[in-house]
Image (cartoon, rainbow over all chains, first blue to last red):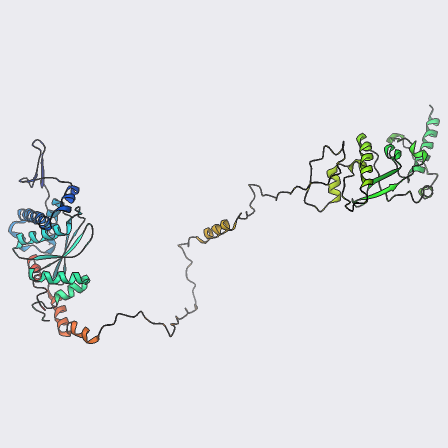
Length: 189
Length: 285
């Protein structure tokens, strides 16, 4: 089954006469240099940065919903990766790559242009997007990152603290996945 | 003068020549000095100084050098043999002379007089190497080559002055430069220093290994040597972990089988199915 590609036609509308920029022809937007945001996020509190990422995630969910509508509940992993990846790319957040490791959902966001607060923005944006699209409370825990990319694992909110503890202990990604799978509903510890 | 008179004159001349043939010829300047030191070239080109005390007979002092031309020479039978002529010469006055040149340049006579006086003063010096070229008609450089045929040091600075003045100073040695190969020569050039030699050697070791290797030879091949592991060889030690603790931490066999089985069986059709499954993870413990 071929997945429809993200339709980016008309995603950005430049109204040069009025000096405006419209996202999808209806949402007012501003093209901001990443360096300006970096300078802002260096001094901004964490909740401000996470709020910024949450709003970006909500906007990405709107872009996906506008394109696929109620079919989003029927999309498989690859199809949603195509649509959600297109939306996040349109916002300039980077390249989305979602993977399944066993029963775990692992999300990578690469080629990010933001340097300051990019981990928090990626995490909060993913949480907001998935919540808007599928109405599931969830948490995204960053298991690794560098200057331009972040790797996240999606877990339930009550499991997030445990997983963050494993990350703090220095467990490798494989060990973390093994521990995450042990004790699931089907596997009793 | 008639022909007969010419013949008679020539015959008389020949008689005189035959008589004086074996006697040493003394130049006029040397004859004026009672004692003469002469450098005598020997047959093998070695100059040997031999102080000579010559009392020149009066007829030799007054003798004139006669130049003979080829057309004036007449073949005549000698009236006296060379042996008889040699007997007429006093034995003590016969020097070990094999050849004396009489074609010395005009300045040579004066130079010979000066040289002879200096040589006589230096007779007590053991060093025999001096320039005697004016007497023998050779330049100082030629004399130097004769006195030191094996030497690699040569002085050409006094070539022009050797004929007019006699320089009794020893020949200054000038080191001869090493023979350098021309630019077109294929002769290998030696490195100038050890560092340069090492650099060339390192450069030679950086040869590229050809990508194309010859095909393997057919037929029986020599077996590769077996790797002998030393008896004391040990693998790197792993961090110690209590086996009991490891068993407790590790999931049981049934858990692993169930986990692996579920992971294999789990094939979500939609993303929301995967999302629900991942939200169930980690709820144990």
